[in-house]
Image 1 (cartoon, one colour):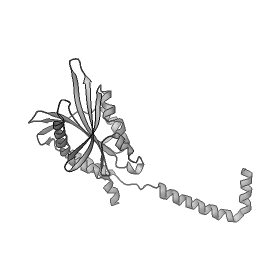
Image 2 (tube, rainbow, N blue to C red):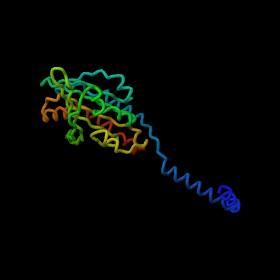
Image 3 (cartoon, rainbow, N blue to C red):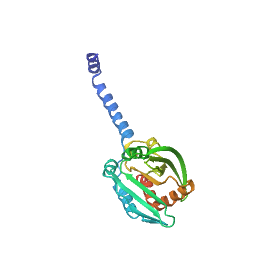
Image 4 (tube, rainbow, N blue to C red):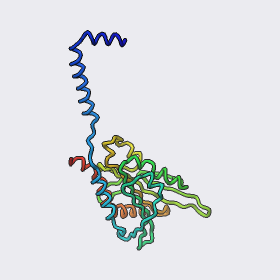
Length: 237
């Protein structure tokens, strides 16, 4: 078969070379038009996100925040551009809540660190997870609400985690499943993604949990907006 092909090409002589050359050129042009992904310098965007994070207030209304220690293992897994872990206490009601907000340069780094993976590894059992839509500053936050329990000798600890993902093309999605549905291509990963969790005690009523979520998300709204705006940089190029 190979000898037959070689013989056929020789018989076509000079005619074959231009045709093959044109086909090769067309193939190269087509490949470039389909596969070429413009490279955008995202360093200014990620620097801006860090700057906004550094300027977030530690006092949000009646809530006073303190930074919590971050395990080295979590930092190694996430390789974050921004990582906020804070405990907030409401000086008026005495209620407590934790806020975790992590933004990664590559959104794939987030897939190893989310409620249904992390909390069971710490001894928590997920009792339920429900879709939950919350209005904050006129924006609908599609959120996943996780109820968790950890058995203890005298009683069971309970908590509720409200989780959502921040995508730098202006979208909010409620969990990793929603994030995974987005394009995994490099062009959509240059700006990374972020995750925010608001964690409260499980004994609180749904209305109180909603109010705490709204207040603390409102306090972090400038950072959320900065992360959401990533793809605007691409359109400006």
